[in-house]
Length: 188
Image (cartoon, rainbow, N blue to C red):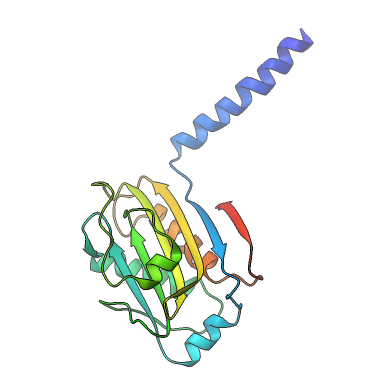
């Protein structure tokens, strides 16, 4: 009887909890990588030089993301950082200076590749907005300082709470207050 209770507790309880979580929708997940070049004061330095340009690509569409998606990304960066940095969506990434580059539903690319790109990478598939894959990088010139990869499901629009949550998490992860060489996965 005790063994049966243990099996029930070990097998059924996690299954029930996973079922409840699945019913509530996908929890946005991010993973970040921090370059040895990164210094936590980089964002302050970028802000001291003026607005920080943000390029938001739509990999599924093969160009710039829609205005609502660009606005949601910039709003998340504005509210998700601890500095007075002013972020502005731009149509093309500058080759020099600090910038943030984001790619939604595109092919997997490294942060360094994002920092060097001037056009949206070719789509890996015709994904819909409902399943969001985000690659983002904070760059100095054409070098990646930090990169974030994130996922979420159940996104219906650029106003969707799932998307806003993913973007807030990505903004927080792009500008860590920690040293380089840290690799971690965080569910919200």
